[in-house]
Length: 113
Length: 115
Image 1: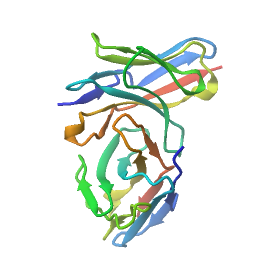
Image 2: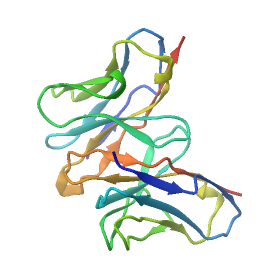
Image 3: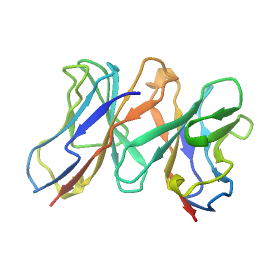
Image 4: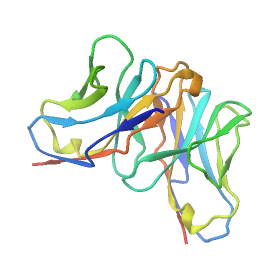
C-alpha cells in the first residue's frame, strides 16, 4: 500500500497569492501524477512525472507548474492564484509496471477568494 | 483515441439488493482496466483490476467486475449492496505503453444505497 501525503488538506486564500501544494510519498515510486477534480466530477490530468527531473504537462491545460527534484516529492505551484483555480487537487503515484494501479492521496481542497 | 464511458451518472439501489455500475471502454490493444471508489473529501481508492486471464475479477469489500471483450465492457458488481457502499465510482483504462501508459478515467458514477 502506497503512503501518499498531501498538504495542506484545505486552503482558503486570496487572489494573487503564490501557492505550493505538497505531495510526498514513501514507497519510492518513480511515476507521480497531479489531477484536478471539481466536486463529484471527473478527474483531469494536469501534470505527471516519470522520475527525478522529468515533468510533463497533462491533458488539461493548467497555469500551475511542478518540479521533481527528489523521488519522494512532487510539489505543484500556482504563481498567482485566481478564483478559477478553485478546485480539488489529487496527487497519485504508480509502481513499476504498466499493470500497476495508481495510488491516491486524500487531496487538497483549494478555494481562491 | 482511447476513452472510457460510464453511462449512468447515478445508480440507486436498496440495501441487500445486487448492484451494477457500468463501464465501457475504447482502447487500442489489450486493455488494463481498473475500478476505484471515492468517498467524500478523500482521494480515490483502488478496488480491483483486470490485466489478463479470468474474465471475472474479485476485489476489495466484496466487489467484483466482469471483463467482456466483445462488448468492450468492464461492469462493477456486488451481490448484496450496503449503505456504506454509497460513494463515487470511477472506471479507468490504461492506454498502451507507447503513449505514456497514463490512466484514462470515466466521468464517474454516484452510487446511492438506501436502507
